[in-house]
Figure (cartoon, rainbow, N blue to C red):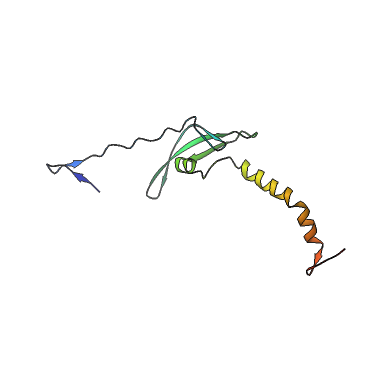
Amino acid sequence: MKLRDVAGRFVRLPQREHKNLVNRCFGRLTVVRFAGYMSIKGGTRRLWVCHCSCNSGRRVVASTNSLTCGITTSCGCRRVEAITARNRANRGRRHEQRQTTHGTTTA
């Protein structure tokens, strides 16, 4: 939508100020620097290089939206830790399930 002033000329709207996310933390990620833009259908996304605070020290490229909305919070280390913890908690239960045959347990 283009706006016109009183004389009928098109008015240029001021550019929106972009957030500077450098040195901000989102979960385990700390934003290091601006990476550039990514074109998507209907607009562009601003990308940021982030450093993960886990022992691997991986770097991740994430968009402003995924960082601020909490979609991206680590390099993937949090997911691995959650799966490992879940497997440790279920270790005994899986063994019991293997011993059952057709709903009856073998003693």
